[in-house]
Image (cartoon, rainbow, N blue to C red; front, top):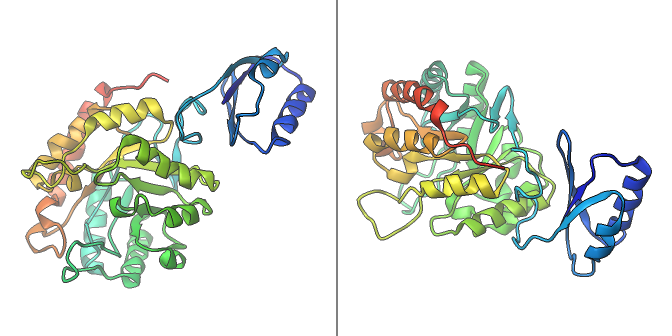
Length: 337
């Protein structure tokens, strides 16, 4: 349920209203605009008397909403959320790019790529320390040593770091990580999401391989229900019958999510396509569809990468992509609030 308050009201009226609502066991999500204040009611609103609320002098309108996701819903929060990570911002009109190798392999490799992507305009450094692989025999990442190398690269370049968490037990290792990534396979690991909701760190949440938009937003809701509103949604392709690409990049989801939620939406064209030559066109299409950012895999020697070299760009190709993004950014789709 959403309450839209009148433009002018007294502090006494406001306190009386909010205290009454809280006494019913409801949580309140407040969003203040330049002329309008919206209060979202979260919890069991079945006993709330719509007509009584509508009769109060402080209330402009009362609306019931059907979507199960409340905190993530744009109706509760009409203005776009901007997630701040150091000096970088995700959301708010500019396209922010996260880039780096699929997996951390060595300090030399990581720092070299970090310097290159920073020079080209990336604002965050990605790199996998823990790698979920389909085969138990494939490279699984350097684990805690990989996080140490990411922190060293951060110290040298100043770029905030993004890396994926696999299990709740690993959370202490992520104390100094700037953005915690939840991969597609963990999108519905609800116990993990609950724990991440207790942190204040930005969470980059990837859409599951076979998840609907509503399921995706409900996973974000798990994090936000714990009090952490710093959630970044990432479309990374879904599983379809098509085998020519690694996944099928659902760009319609980007434009749709921008209308359904206030959370920033980014796209991972590297994992979506699995083919380096397709990363640039899909990245540009993502920006045109309204994405707030991109996450791109970049490796200094893709043919010899320990993980996903076939979808990684060289630093030179990444620099070319960044120049093209700047050209298309002014024409990007803007969702209507």
